[in-house]
Length: 164
Image: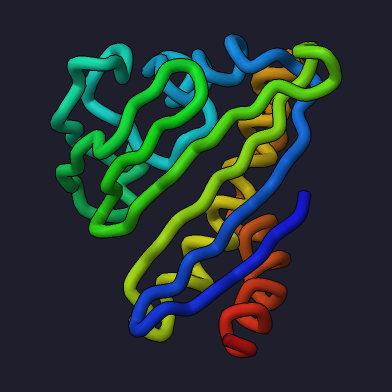
């Protein structure tokens, strides 16, 4: 997985590029259908399917790791682009077919206010979530979501953000 980080004003944007061996339509379902999202996304989205008419979302952490929150779908272009507001951060999912359509290049970014903690914490969290997404679409057992896994990669993201 390739990761880049940029800073504009007081916001940090971290972009992940990950090659998945499954076609775009399968990955699209994993980022828009609640039953699949709940297996890898950090919070429940409050709707069964994120679709072209979805505007508002309500996020609830399943293990009460954080407060509930509201968000909106900012852009939706099935099956290529989904952009949403998530806890005052902007999540962007871009899917591009690769390998004659058999695979997908996922470009995921999150753009958040730099409060000294959130860019690092969220980036490490998204890294783990994207590992979960990859396993889900590959049809293999999902790695355990553990605080140890998140903590093991957090220093890498702290260093990236510090260099901005």
